[in-house]
Length: 582
Image 1 (cartoon, rainbow, N blue to C red):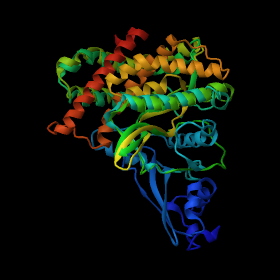
Image 2 (image 1 turned 30 degrees about the vertical axis):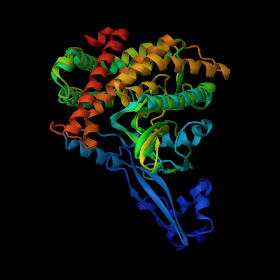
Image 3 (image 1 turned 90 degrees about the vertical axis):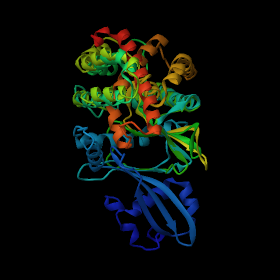
Image 4 (image 1 turned 180 degrees about the vertical axis):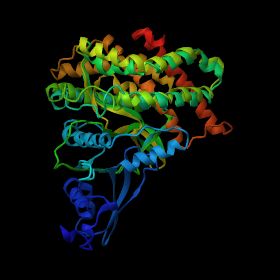
């Protein structure tokens, strides 16, 4: 294949100095990308180059928008090269340290495991979920420390999709779109349980909650700074108390709840927030249709050493995120739910291939969480500055108690739950937030409603409710979340039961048990939202001080979102275990 290059020596050059050549990349594209082969025809390759589009926001990887040009051919083929590396985390940590947030060190092996989990997802599972909206993957290579660089090559979606905006609440239609995608994920995962059940152990160990303790407090202080005290003071004590019980809540969700009778588990993304959701875009704006879910980097099972890199379609030009400050609409959310449903049905269909083989845990260790909890209080205080004191003062005491107690009892509570029951689980994405959901967009930037889920490196065995709670906590404004919880969660569960019956899959979970799972998952996602809030502010260069009319309005809405989330979390904590608020 040397003749495919104008310069025969070009194929032997290393891409950006990593341990793979231009020849290897092109070989993957020739074998996997029909678009590349059609565009190239008989032309030789003139150049292959990529530039970093991570923008300093990459947590584990560098993402390169890569372009191939051809001799005697004015067309350009664009795709994405995603390369994990410790330096990405170092850059991310340094940026937050400048803002006074001293993030914990992460062991290199955890990052390696997360990348290899995404490789596992694309190589072993995604082809069995044909309707799941994920980027096209062109090649795989696992990461072996000091031996082999990891890599993911995929389609570029930037022209037609956009990442969900963190500062803009999702619309009802966007939420419907996401729920549809979650439905696809969960329903499909229920159909192929044998492929994942029990195989994908968490990359982390329970018992490490320091990171949550550190970040939650900082995020809570941040939110309070944007609110008036009357808005948050009534929940602050409960928020802090609830946060202190993170260990217990974590343990309840990850160890106890999954063994409740008739609580089926599914595959979950695990990190469904704005940055992992991409919506189709029209006129430069996200529309209601979810384009893809990204960042599935949590599959735990180690893949064979001969597996290659992950090559995927580049989506950047026609896809985008909904910003973290914004909300998915209903159609986008329900489309996303469809994707999750498909994954869950597949995972339930063949439980024997994964049940009990991947463990049930979040992507962060409870030991790691303990010092992150220090971030809860400052983030709560920050959030309170966004809204009036009359709003928050009524919950302030319970917020503080929740924060204090959460990390103390969560492990034991989850151990009791997991030992005493048999809760159904599914494969979940485990990181569904805005940045991992991409929506297609039109030429003028309008974001459409069709999502694609990306970044599956946190994928794990988890409760059916986990990805749903992740979406609704991270990506949706409170009013729409309440509407979906009341009207669409019952419909989702009904569709899941019907899909299982249609495929002769046993799912004995009741809707009441489904809601109990959702309550626990909601608490877990509330904690993570609070501990990472300050980090998101820093990584997006959002001013903490007032005086900017544009940002002041967004921060006020964010403060209301935090207040609503914590108020609802307190109510759920009281239902599950009132001691978490004492």
